[in-house]
Image 1: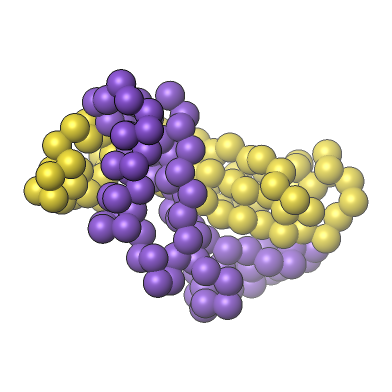
Image 2: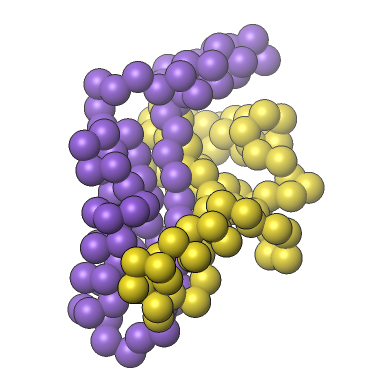
Length: 80
Length: 80
């Protein structure tokens, strides 16, 4: 069972990568870009047949290792 | 107009971050995890009312700056 975890910085937190990228995009002529923010997309493949249990497991992984719940929010979706 | 760009490494390319993460997950007891791969999720906000033109613009940004088309594949979706 495959899940995609999308991890984004919580609003209001500094995003230096986003700031640098928006500057570069403006320099390249994409002047209508107003905001850029960077996050992570992690795909996890689990050997399981129980979707509810697998989702709970992915959520626990996010809390324990993959995300930083203080600074980041995350979303889990099944993709396969 | 808001778009999410999901950038993933092309299959077969080394993913050291994924390898290190799967080892840590196994150590933590998540032994049914078979594969982990890392990518980027970039959210771009564009001042535009023409969806087709904005999508073309985001695609050009990916080709020129945000993704490495040799090593990465990307997907663009409108989210707002």
